[in-house]
Image 1 (cartoon, helix red, strand yellow):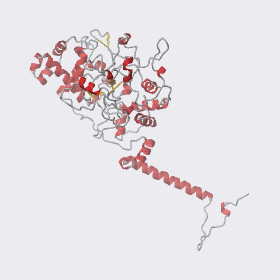
Image 2: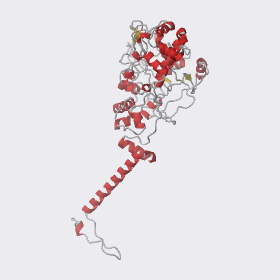
Image 3: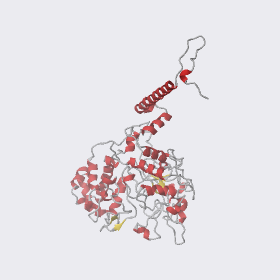
Image 4: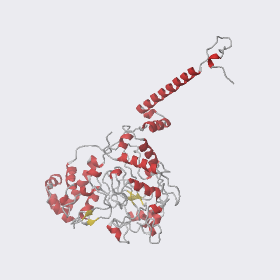
Length: 480
């Protein structure tokens, strides 16, 4: 049946009034277009207002603005360390840090393994570095980065001990903690107390409490700078071109006191690491995004969401991503220790001995907790700042890119045959870098390790690519 055109319809006459014109189809479309344009303009104005005054926006609106623009809808002011000229002590420490003459070989300094151009980590992809008197001795672990250690607390076990001058009996603390269930790690949520795990300290096993203690270790390590005794270090310091600076700062008597000379030298190295902003620059894209000065791409933003998702990657369960209430920028570590069960690295010479195991907190390089076997296999959670600049990962340097690292987290439990080697009978050697009696220490409670064999991996390839894109925003030196 044919309908009359809109134009042919009779006018509508309201009761008691004049006829009102009828809108044609074209008029209705024109009105609809103007309405949509008006709504779009209003939304654009609202979004612009939200960018200028994000703190006034409801959370739901902030999330929409973040998704569309990549801007942080709730920027913060970060409290960075004060940037001031280095003190005389720190300037002395800088010279010591780069001085190769302090090694037995005359070819190695602190900077040899902690390159300023590589976020104070190694400048190569070797799983361990070569050192010793003739630079032919292999180490046992890849050197960790020296960045973002200025807030590291002394080693402790259990609830946060904070700053204390009272000596801590580690054996007593560990014994008290034995049998207490470890707190589960959840992204963006504080762990339930008591978090009965080791925390704080320096090196992969936390055996040094201060930057001063950390600095002295490599000087007398036979596979590093290889001085036979502390007295050898003192003799080398007395022969340096900066001895007069020691005397000016600490008094002329320091030249006749070898132990004090070494102590003050290492104190100076520690001051250099604390005062020089290159050790804690906080100049990454993520820092600027937190402050509302940069925008994340869709991939980076999605990666951040996955990084923080307690049911997905759950990276933030250990690598804290949120600023503190006091405005301190996140350093992307909870400074606690975890047993992750990474596969053994056959490229480390020490691992050629099948009886050798590096078990972190309980040995072999620290002995005070050797009997506390509940901690065997635990290593310090490192910062993820500048992680994209590293060329080897985990305490044994078994992986060499972030995709391999993320595959380990994603597949360790669901498809272990893709992570670990097989023995002669074809059986997958899961957790093959830890003696079997300590396999129970490995984390299977926190996502994504809470998946079972044969389960669907929690992250897709695209998820992993986006998380890596986000982690690249943690590199210092961002330029828009």
